[in-house]
Image (tube, rainbow, N blue to C red; front, side):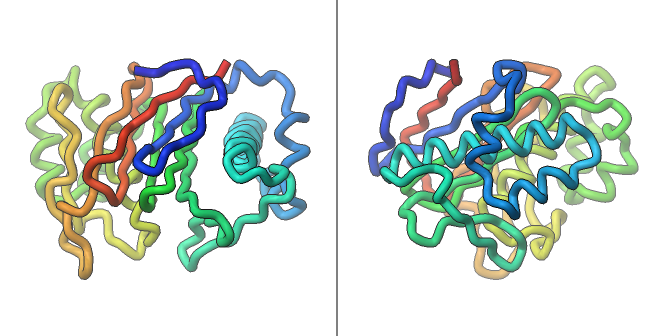
Length: 236
């Protein structure tokens, strides 16, 4: 489960994931000071204030942690982006990813391998068969249809976060079709990447797991490594 973070440094076999509660940060000034001009411009383009806050806090917190691990001032960290828009830090040995939804966010950092995280706040209007058929694989749609009405909201977001975590870890964005791989989604069933039907990718190369967040949230991580030591942190 989540432990309070007190400045620990990741060892070579560890995956660090922090759960952020945005209500713990009433002021954005601490994080805004760490953003580049391009990042500030991106934050300003968000239509909703909640999205601007979420982006600023998660990006700023990521830079704080990377700065602490590298010894570099966080404000000096500049990210580059691959063709699909995934950020990376070329001069760093760390892989990282962030996600935010509702009032919570995730930040993941590891020296091991590419990683993806996703957190989603439940939205009942999205948990329809029509949307599942559009974004899920045939196998996932069948598993979704087998759920009773009380399970469908959680099952839908189990699938959504697990698929997003894998897509983000792979770094291919939507150039990897969402129907080209299968994840588990049934509430109470272990989170797993079952199959990948995309050239150069094998399900056995990746570890996909759910994160212990309570409804109305679901969360997941995926890393290209079979046995990381997982460290789950909460901020204070």
